[in-house]
Length: 410
Ligand SMILES: [Zn+2]
Image (tube, rainbow, N blue to C red; front, side, top):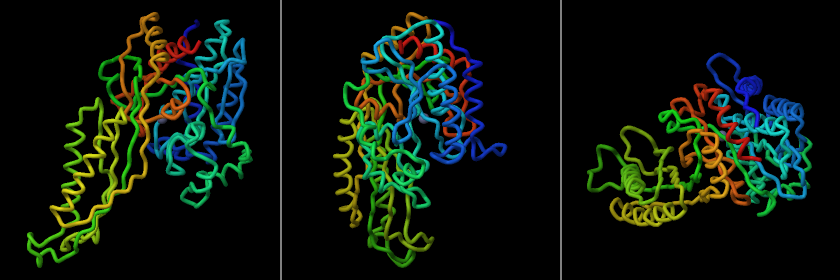
C-alpha cells in the first residue's frame, strides 16, 4: 500500500473550507445544509471523487457516494465517510476529515494496484449537524429507517421550509425516498474516520483512537409548576418555589449520573427558563431540558427509573407539580467487534500506536450501526477543542489515520 499524503489531505480540506458563509476573519467556518456554500462544496467534492476514479452517485436525501468498484460487485459493499455540513462558526475538520481521508484512502488502494473484492464507497452523509432542521444525522437516520418522508414533511427550518419541500425544490426524487432505507446485510461493514472532539488522544500523544462505542442521548423537557408570590411577603415555610424545586431535581440528577455503575454516563441541564423572572418574585413556573447520555441503554434506563422517584420526592417536598416529557431516547452503539478487530490488527501490523476510546458525541455511524457492522477511527483534536474556529488536527495525524483506514477497508 502506498503512503497517505498529508499534503493532498491538506489541499482538499483547505479547498472545502473556502465554501463558507462566514468568511470574515475570526468567524470560523459555517456551512449549513443546502445553502449556497454547502451546495457548492458538494459539487467540489464530487469533482475530487471523480478525479481519483470513483463512480459518483447521490440518493434522494442527498447522501453522496463515491465508489471504488470491487471485482465482485454482487457482494455487499464496504462503507466509509462522514459529513460536510457544520455548526455555526465551526472549524475545518469535524466531518470533513472523514470525507477527505476516505477519498485519499480509496485513491491509495486503487493507485497501489489493489482491486478489492467488495466495492468500497466513501459517503457524504446529508446534514449530520442539527443546524438547519434541529435534528441531526438526516442522511444516515433516513438510511436507518428512523426518518420517514412523513417526518420530513413535518421537519421545518427557521423560515418554515420543510426538509421534504427543500429536497423537492432542489430536484431530488422524493418519490424514491423509501429506497434510501438499508436493511441488515445490505452493507458488509462501515468504518468512519472522525476527529476525536475530546482530549484523550492529544493528551496521550497517540495518533489513532479505536472507538468501541458511541453514546446516545435521552432527552426530556421538564416543567415544574409551583406558586408565584412576593419575595418579601411570603415566609419560607409557605412557599412552593418552582426554581428551588428545579435545583433539587438538578442536584439529584447529578448524583444519579455520578453514582451510576455504567462505564460512561453524563447528565446535563443545559437550558432553564424561570417565570416570571423578576428579582422580587418567587418563581411559579420553571421549564428545563434534561440530557442523559451513556454508552449503554441499561445505565440510561436505570437513571430514568430513578428520576421518577426524584420527581415524586420533589413534588412532595416542595408541593409543586413536575411534568416530564420524553422527547428522544436514542440507542447507543456498541461498535462491531469484527470491524474493531480488523482495525486493531492493522494498527499492530503497521506499528501504529493506538488507544481504545468511546465517543461521547454521536455521529452518522450511530445510525449506520443499526443496519451494518460499524466502528470508527478517531484522530487527535488539539486540546480537545471542536465546534469552534480553534478546532485543529495536524495533517500528519490525518495521514496516519488514513493509512490505518485504507489498510482496514480492503
Ligand atoms: Zn462530526
